[in-house]
Every structure is written in C-alpha cells, then in structure tokens.
Image (cartoon, rainbow, N blue to C red; front, side, top):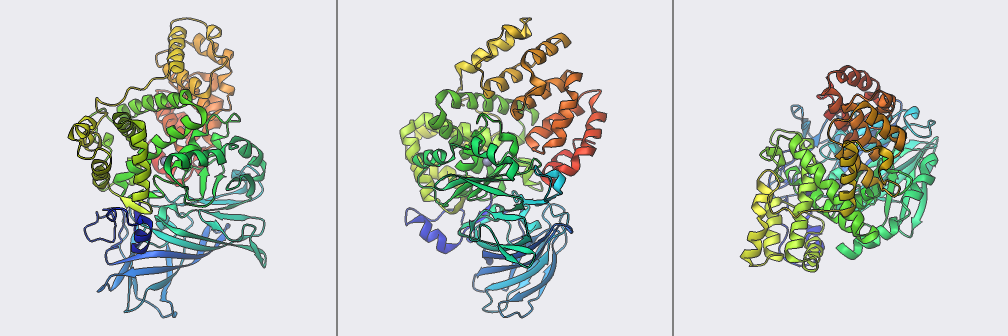
Length: 623
Ligand SMILES: [Zn+2]
C-alpha cells in the first residue's frame, strides 16, 4: 500500500506524459505519512540489499541490510523505521562506524533509527537481528504445515510490519528497489517477491543460499519472503504456482486459468510490467485471502475449492499488479485507491473470463456484504465508512474494512456507467500509464479524474458527486443498482424455505458457490431446529469443503446454536487463520449467551496457529 518515489524512476516511468505525480514523497509539500518516522524530503532510501540467514530454532533472521540513500543538500541524517529489531552496528561503505540512535518506542510505530550521515555517505550497512516476536514474520513448526515434516517461514509486510524485519523507511510513499541473499537450512526453498536468480539455491555447507533482485521500485510493504518445503509447477509461459508438494496438484488444477487471466488483465489495463506472475499457496495460517506481493502473490489455501469457484481472489491479487503495486496509495488513509480500484478491476477480469452473470453475482454479494459492513461500523453516518478515512493515532489495519474495497469499487462502477465503458476503460489505462511506479493521494486522484475523465464537463462531474463519495460517510444515493437474476431466484428460494417449504423442494442442482453463499446469507431470520436439520441433512452443509459455503453455514449454526455443527466450527477455527473468516465467527460466538466460553476455549487452542495480523484483531474480541 504505501510508496515514496525515486526521482530517476519517476522521470523514466512517466515517459514525459503530464506532470510528476502530486504525491512524490520527496517533495517537501508531499503529505506526511503519519505511520512512518522517515523524513524522505531530507534523505530517503532508494535501494535495500538484504543478506539474512534464517534460524528456525531461534525464530530469528540475522545479517545485514545495505541501504542506498538519496540525500538532499544539507541533509545530516537519515531516519529509518524499526520495530523490535536488535541493531548491532551501522557502518558506511568503507566499514567506518556511523553514529546512530534508536529513539523512544511508540506502541504502534516502533522506534525511529536515526543515523548520522557524514558528507558524501550514500550507502549504509545496518547489521541486525529480528526478534522472535517480529510481527511480520510467522515461523511455523512442521506440524503447522501441510507436509508436517519441515518448518515454514513467511512474511506479511502490509501495512506497517516490514519494519519488524527490515530497517528501512517503511512508508507506501517511499519506493525502493531491492536485492537479497537468503540463507536457509538444506531441504528448504526460499522465495521472494522478486526475480529468483538461483531458483534451486546454491549449497554452502549444510545450508542453501538463494538470491533475488527486484529492479522496479516498490513500497517496502511489498518486500516479501517465504521459506519452507516449497515445490513449483509451471502453468503458462510466465505463470506458475508454488506450494508444499502435497498441495501442488490441487493448486495447479485450481489455477489452470492463470495465464489467461494475465492476458485478460493486460487487454483491459495495459502491459503487465513485472515479468512473471506466480502464486504461492501458503500454509493455512495465512491471515489474508491473498497478498499482492510483486511477481509472487501469496494466497490462502482456503481458496482451493476444487472447482475453481473462488479464483476471483487471484483475479483481485493480479489486478493489484496495476492498482496498488504500479500506482500506490501514498499513505494508508488513501488505501481505498489500492483496494477500490482493484476490486472494480477484479470484477471486470471475472466478467471477461467467466461471463457477465458470474461477475454480477460477485457484485451483488459484495454490495450486500458492504451494507452489512456499514451497519457493523455504526451505520451510514459512521466515520469509518468514509473512503478517505481518518487514521490519526490508529493502526492502519483499523481502516482495512470492506469499505475501501466495496464502496471504492462502487464509485468506479458509477464512473464507468456515467461516462460509458469505452471512455472509462481508456481513462483507466491512461491513469496507470500516467502514474506508473508512483504513489497517489486521494486529492490527486480526484484532480486526475476531473482533468482526464470528466474534463471541463461540470454537469458530468456534478452527477458523480465525487466529493461526497470520497469525503462523506455512507453510500451516496447515486450508487448504481446491482442485480443478478440468478441470485434473485436464490432469494426467492430462501424466502420459500423460511416460509416452511422443505429443503428438498429447492432447485439447487446447478447452484454455484456464489448462489450457495447468497442463499445462506439470505436466511437471516430465525429458523427452527427442524429447519436447520432439514437444511443440513438435505445439502450436507456441515460437511462442505468449500470454505466460503462452510463459513456462511457456520454463521447460521452459531446464531442458532445448532449443536451438530459445533465440532466442524471448532475444526474450521483451529485449522485455518484467515481473518475474514475468524473475526465474524468469533464475534458471533461472543454475541450469544452460550458462546463466550466456547470462543475463549477454542481461541486458546487456535491462537498459536494464527498470524499476528489476526491475533491483533481477535484479542480485543475474544476476552
Ligand atoms: Zn486487495
């Protein structure tokens, strides 16, 4: 999400089209990123070269980061972000010690690392170790993996966690290229969000060394590492899948359309600028559905449904190769520019690949989830339903609700419908070209729309109500209606069932995953014990392997305290760590009169499985 811009890249990437992005963090006028200690207008990191060894027993990465610094005249120091890092030394390129100071600890942001910069110094080496509790890193014991024989490590940098394993300027507005040398025990493979220079590693003693480089500058939250028993299968000329060997077949089958997906995205958005596009299927504890790490999307195994019905998640992560990774939110309050644009593009990719009906179903599901989310956040006047959300003094994670995704996507759909698809598509492509490898603020985006989409047409601009969409809470009344005939039929079925029709009378034979999700979500009222048993017996819901369908059913089961599903609920909560599934289920449990003790008991068992991103959300819920 966050990124600062290198001037050389800015010049070359913009290809002389239009002015430099307004959000060049190097400019003194650039918005200050409240979630970083860095002062990039004085001295900023332009390249990170890592040399780290992974100690799986101590759960520590140790080694060094060599940082290339672009300094403005008069700069005397550079300020980095760190959190829970043990810094051993800081030296210049000649090995001379540099004076450094770790500032006071801020509970949210960590500690600034301020390093004196003598004249001429543009390269500094920080020798350091991570702490075993580094929040970006999850170290899994063999038993927590699919194969069960080897340990596993992965990183999750977004939003402000990269500073727990790399001492750098950890802001989405500060773009950096990177290279890395990663040492892991023999038998493991390291992969990163970068070009893999030694795919099989080079043996050194009883260790394997892997080297990487990424020559396109990215915000540091996109620097990502995983290591474990990881195998690879090619899918297309520039696409493939990485997974533990026992998961590889299923993953390759699920993502068979990957190459076609990249081609479809390119047809819509312009060239894919990152070289390869691979997907890494992680162990089940991964807290997100996916993370759009460049060249290598990290994905949860919970999307391996066996029928490719949940691959819209991959379309989403792929779309981030443009919205997010190429054009990046300048600060975390601009997060909707990453996620709203991406969620819109996701639907367009799904429409192109699988047809309008599938896309319409996804859009209807997203809209109804957005309505629920707005209610959960406090209703249409709640401040957290504002796209340009106020994160003062807050964890950026607090802004990662469905609002930036679904409300943001709805705004883009409105733009498309207002100006027409052809004109909007041309605009979208030009937007990515204009701001390639740069970061963008919300005001700069609105300016871009006024200049390049609506032009001087005040009527058009007025019809969009852009300011209301971006700066006001709730969903404006010009939000386009969404409809799916297939889901309307499903709703009718849900009403009939709630009204007393038996489950067997429903015409469910051809239902897709999305229809099942919608059916279960539509059963919002109170069902009798015999209705619950009828549903479960007729459709085998408690035994479903599809994570989305099972999740929707388990929410009903918790609400009604449907005892036969409780062992499955416990298994679901203790066998995967995706926050999207965990938070609602724990919240639902805590809201019942019988559930809090159960929630606490299950959480105590499951918590060691979960990533810190999930436990940070869940700890205050399950008390
Ligand atoms: Zn996303």
